[in-house]
Length: 380
Image 1 (tube, rainbow, N blue to C red):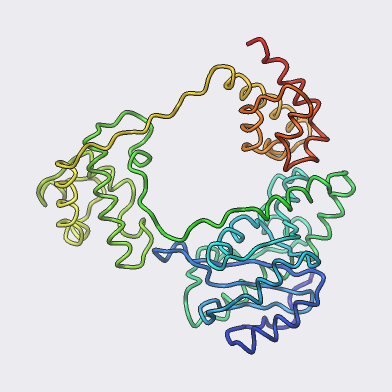
Image 2: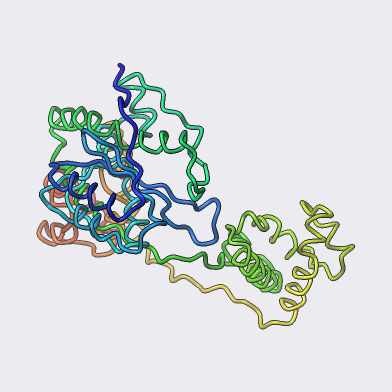
C-alpha cells in the first residue's frame, strides 16, 4: 500500500514556529506523538526530539531550542483531543521527567495490538502486517542529540507518527469486533499515570552487579567504589556508564582486586589502552574498597506461605486464561495487580472490586474467576 508522505516534515525550532504549530494542532480532534532520546550517548538522558503529527502535517520539535514548551503541554492535557502513541510508556516517562507534562485521552497502538493477541507488536511489524510497509530501522539507535540533524534522520523520525492514524483506526475496529475496546480504553487511561522518573544516572547497585549468588562482602565493597569511580568519569565525559567501563569489567576488577598496573592488565577484558586511561583511578578505587566498611546486603522480608500460595494460584489461573484468549499473561492481569490482590487477600467480591479499583473492566470480565481461584488457597 502506497501511503508514503507527500510533503516534508516541518522542523520547529523558533518561538514563532512553535506558536504556529500549536495553532494548527490545537484544532485537531486527534494527533500522533512520539519522542527520541539520547540514552546511548549522554550521561543524563534527555528528550532530543518531539514529533507531533496531524492528519495533514508532521511537525518535529527541537527541544534544545526552547526554554518553554508549555504550549505542547496544553495539547497533551486536552481531554477532547486524542493523542495516539505507539508504546507510550517510555515517551510519557521522558516527557513527564523533562517537562512535567500531564496526559489524558491517549490511544496506544502497541497496547491495542497486545490486547488483540498480536504475536509481534513492534511498530515495524504492525506496519508490515497491515500496510506491507517496511519501516527503516537504520536509525533506531542513532544519536538524536546531533545538531544539525541530518535530513535522513528527520525523515525517519517523522514516520513514527505519520502512519499512526491509519493503524489506530484498524486496531480500534478490531478491538470493537472482538468486544475488547473497553479493556483497551481502560489500559490507555491507566497508561497516562506512568511516573516520570527523576533525571540522572545514579550508581548501579553493587549487589545487583555482583549477581544473585553469595559474593564476598569485601569484593562487593570494592565493586561499590568502582561504580562510584565509573559514575564520576561518565559525568565528566557526558557519556553513559557502559561507554566508560562495562559492568563485567567492574565485576572482574572487584574479583581480582589488583594492586598494581601489571595485575590490572591481567584482568579479563582490559586492554593496554584501558589500563592507561583508567588504571590510576581503578587502583585507587580498589584500595578504598579494601579499607571501607563492608557493604551489607539488605535482607528482604520473606512473604508468608499463604501469600506465596495465592501468588502461585493466581499466576496459574492467569497463564491458563491468557492461553485460552491467545494473549500475553499480563494482558489478562498485570503483575502489579496480581501481587496487590494476593497481598490484600480479598474475601468477598466487594473487597476484590476495591483491590481492582483501577481496572473495573477486568473485574467485570474476570472477577468471579479470580475469586474462584483464590478460594482454592483458603485452607493452605
